[in-house]
Length: 44
Image 1: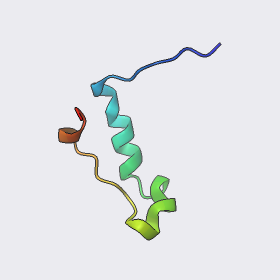
Image 2: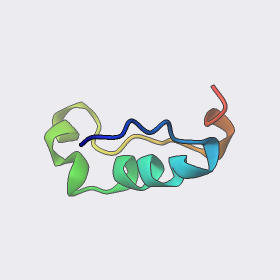
Image 3: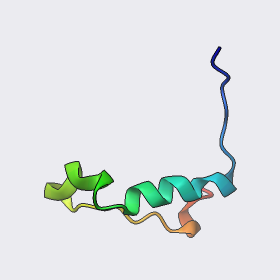
């Protein structure tokens, strides 16, 4: 059984970590690599 889960603002640290990791974002290297995702943008 799959249970849907909506993350809260405090859970966005994980997305921030993924976007900042060069190995995870290696596919995006040609277009700039990692993507900044500062906490100021989390509310949006």
